[in-house]
Length: 554
Image 1 (tube, rainbow, N blue to C red):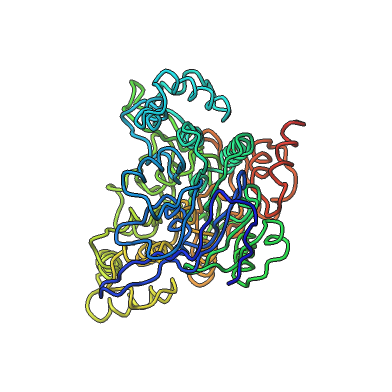
Image 2 (image 1 turned 90 degrees about the vertical axis):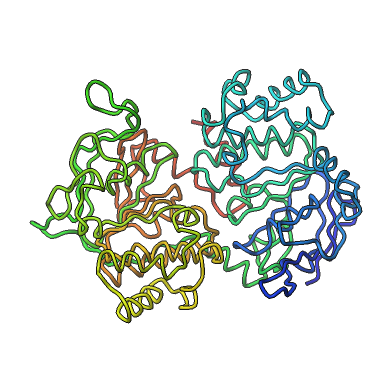
């Protein structure tokens, strides 16, 4: 496609970029091709598209890096006055240390858990010899203040596990900025954060980028976030440019069908529900009474020393979907673990069809295990990478239903049809599937047990907007076809509202309010819930500024 280039001398200039890889047959395949764009000093360019579209591949190429098995096959890449295609490996190391910085999606995975934070933040400039340790530490503390971190003079003395996810993401930003790079690459930096943490991190990112005049590449699949951060947007589809232009133009008048598809998916429209409130005298399918749970060794009172949940009461009816929302650390996943028996409750009862079930999974009958199934957040870690999809799905069919031979094969085909996967995936292993396909296998494994309830724990959090929307469609269809009850845990307010009949709001291990989906837009007296609603980014420019002004006025 034709892309209009800037006329001024850009900080980043990419022309005819092509990155390739080889398949199992040794054939060369294009990962991205015919990529052209420029970025001016102080400008933020967003790379947006679904998983596998080439966003991170392009971002990595700006540092002269290609993933294992890939290579930069063609094109010119100029960054901060340097043609990186001409650099030797030694020159590339210096370039990466001084000219360009990378902020990864998962700060928790990027920090060394055994080193103090301050030592890791100053490490780049100390290793490259551009600053003394004393000067680097002083600069790090100044950055901590600039990024609005709490206790900036002492937070660096902590270890990574001793700070929150949002704080860790800002600390990683300090590490990236300490060398005063010309270019900063932000790769999905807020995807794993809850809405209130995300908005604070976005404000910190944008403030620092503007104040320092940093040129930035912002990789994301979230158009609402991009609308707050970027001056220009490059939309990618299957490794090629689908559309490229200013943020105002793309959001206000998108030209490409794929851009419009991304915008529709970002809205997360409400899916219809056929659930009707229970009739008088009908028993709940699942009931939680006065449940408390925690972690760690037990004290003299027989209760865990670290208490997460306190006196939770919850009811789930047949065919109903309940959404559990709240900030990170509010107890959402601990509640699901307690219901599933993965982390036993220390007090209270869990009733299924009116009968009390054991608090520990090991003490439950096979039938009780079958009827409550858990769908984990990360399909990557939930599915055994060494097993084929057929073996993964066959296990519950054999364990719970005793199926084998033709009967099992036919049921496997039915399961794949339910989750809309082709039969060819049966012979494949999880690592060869896309993120959306893996999550569908994850769902199919739970459905193989023929459960009454599925506990969906952040099942769309790691997925791009289009794939997440498709998974929400699937959950809605499964409810209608199978009469499933669903507990849907998420920090994504749009997703919860899209598929759930009722919304339960948790904070600090307690339920603070519960409301019907139809009442979501109505003001409530619960200030915490109102704060959560306000923190959900809207698909329009200027929302972040308005959010900041509202908070100042309160």
